[in-house]
Length: 233
Ligand SMILES: *Cc1c(COP(=O)(O)O)cnc(C)c1O
Picture 1 (cartoon, rainbow, N blue to C red):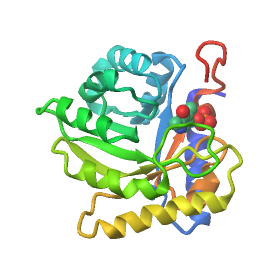
Picture 2: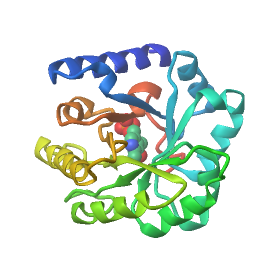
Picture 3: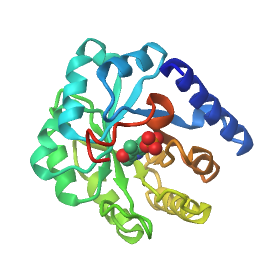
Picture 4: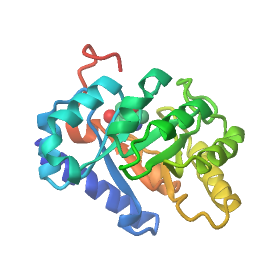
C-alpha cells in the first residue's frame, strides 16, 4: 500500500474510534512518526495533507527538518524521544513541540535556549505508568510538580502529558493516565492550554482514543515497518 492510502486508512481508524467513543474526530490529532524513514516518505505524507510529524533521535530529526526546509512553515515537528541536556539547544531551536520532558533541568534548558523570535516551545510532560520498560518519564505523583515548573518558565508553553504504555497495556492503565491528566488540568484551574494527552501508537490507537487520548503517534501504520537493523528501535 502507498503511504497515501495508509495515511487515509489511519485517519479512518481514528474517526471510527472517535465515533465509537462518542467523540468528535477533530478531538484527536494525528502525529506521523517518521523515525528511520526517509525525508521523501515524509514529503509524500505531507503532500497527502499530513502536517504533524514526530521524530525520536536528535540527529535524525534535525537532518529531516533541514532537508524539508522548503515546507518548514507548514510543518509541525514534534520531538518525542529521549533528550539529553547537551542536545537541548538544537532541539529548542528547531522543533515546535517536545513531548518527552521528564526533568526540571531539561525544561529549564529548553526555555533558556528557545530563540525569543520563535513561538514558545510546546511541552508535554512524559509520564511513566507502572510496568513500562522505558526508563523515561516521571512517576504519576511527580507529574504535577514538573508541570508547575514548566508553567513558570518563560519560553515554554505547557500543553499536557505524554505516555508510552507497554504493548498490550490494559485499558485500566490508559484510563489511569487519563484520570491523572484530568486531575492535573483541574488543579491548574484557569490555565486552559493544558489540553493534550498524547498516547496511542499503531497497535493501540483505538484503545487509547477510547481511554481519552487527544493525540496519537503513528509510525508503522503510515510508513510501514522500520528497518530494525538500521537503528536499534
Ligand atoms: C516509534 C514511536 C511511535 C510510533 O510507533 P508505531 O508502533 O510505529 O506506531 C510512537 N511514539 C513513540 C515515542 C515512538 O518512539
